[in-house]
Image (tube, rainbow, N blue to C red; front, side, top):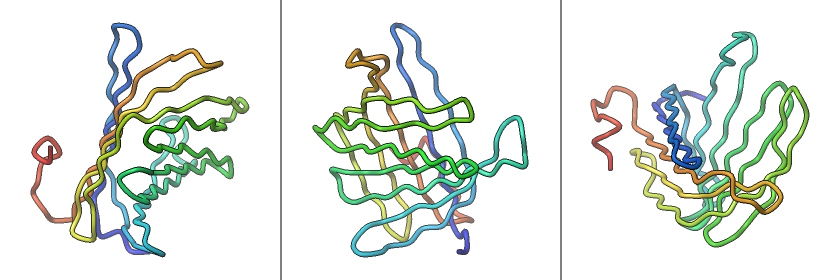
Length: 152
């Protein structure tokens, strides 16, 4: 699938008084299938360039977004659905971990010309909230000059 887009994924995590933001910008593909919108992109492991991480973001509506990450055959799925707490299994080379995810808000305005998806959600372990999180996904066609900060 041809990667005609650039995707920027900006994740901010709030734990106690601390805030940490991570941003990734890379080539991506965009497609629509059965009424859903998909963004597919790859990233590489920080420590091992031979490990390719494939990510698929499925936008079903302004109410539900699913992020699936495949790392060397280990698949993790993050389901963000407004007003719903989902339990999800995160897989890593060290084993699996079950977490709870509750989504407060999703805003999705995206199509073949680009756009943004934003979500606010909390992560819990054993029903104790560990972090509040915000994710912003900006999709634009390659060659466009728009700055990520300008797409608010």
